[in-house]
Each structure stands twice: as C-alpha cells, then as structure tokens.
Length: 146
Image (tube, rainbow, N blue to C red; front, side, top):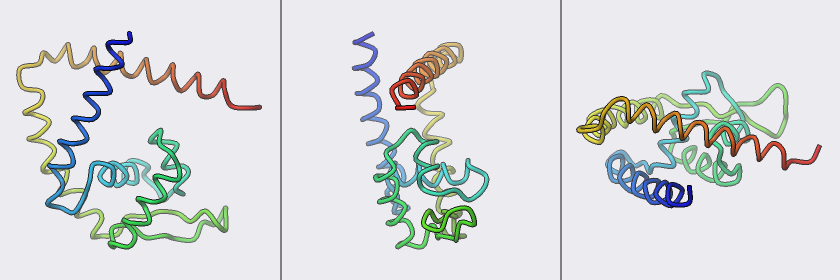
C-alpha cells in the first residue's frame, strides 16, 4: 500500500505539471481549472467553503484562488440569501468560455494518456481510487468532534 501511495503522489505531481502546461496559454493553472470545473459541476452558485468541501481541498487555498479568478473576471460574487458573509461564487461568461476552451484541450490530452491502456484497467484504477477516497473521507468524518 505504501508503494501505491508513493506512486499516487508522484502521479499527482506529474498530472498537475502536465495540466499546468496544457492550460497555461489560457491563463490558467491546474488549480484554477479545477475550481472552474467545481463551480460548473456544482450546478448552482455555492460559497467557497462548499466548493472546497466538494473538492476535498483547503478552504483558504480555494478562497485565495477564487479571489484571483474574480480579479481576472472569470468568476463573480453574488449575495448569499442564507449567509451574509459567505458570498456565492458564479462563473462569468468569460470564465465559462475559458473553461470550455480548457476542456477542448483536455479531450485529446486525456485520449493520449489513455492510449495503450486497457479500459478494464482504467476502470479498476478508478474503483480503487474511489474506495480509498471513501475510506479517507470516512476517517476524516470520524476524527471531527461531535
């Protein structure tokens, strides 16, 4: 298991670096791209804390990146009717166009990565990673005070 974890760390670093190179011409990094994706995936405006939770990321890091995205006109903040201080994050038209451009770059990149890999192996890896994530999420929930 230790070897698997170490391989996952190395893979994660290489995926981020490759993603950074892929979307750099769009003014994005992998982290910014991931946050734009989380906003779209959410399906409705959410506060930063919820986006961070859904991403499994640190709220402060997500807030910093969302602030940068807002300065660049890719996202905007809207009032939250349920919480005065926790504004909702929404994509601007420019943010949506930038994300869509990134996804057009992503498809051939992903296909190239998958070339030569058996679909069954990809599906097995996804199931294993999902099971590990679920276990880690369960441990995180168990460690939180009641």
